[in-house]
Length: 112
Image 1 (cartoon, rainbow, N blue to C red):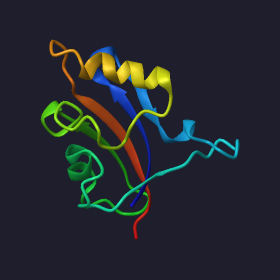
Image 2 (image 1 turned 135 degrees about the vertical axis):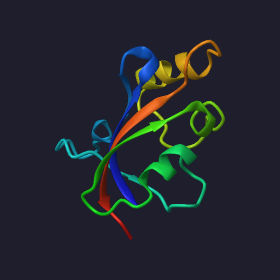
Image 3 (image 1 turned 180 degrees about the horizontal axis):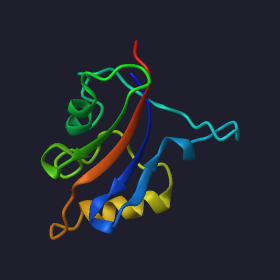
Image 4 (image 1 turned 60 degrees about the horizontal axis):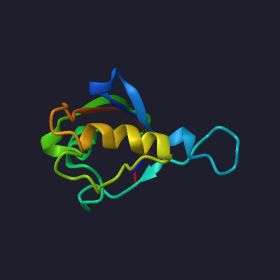
């Protein structure tokens, strides 16, 4: 699956911590999609569950609670692309007093 997406921290009033468009090696503003195989265990289980059933061109908002997100699986994709985004995510994930729920706005670019 290829996804373009933006991840936001709900606890920090929607601060963006992941955006595929910010990963733009050619400079044309297109960004590089997140590519993975459903079921291979490389992305957050909550995100994977949220995209099941989507088809090419589908758009969905996926809310990922801590139990199936970075709270229990901090090393899984998607990981922040810049240091600023990483610090924002860490400020929520590494603080047990904060709600670690995240939100992704996802668009399916390609299904293989």
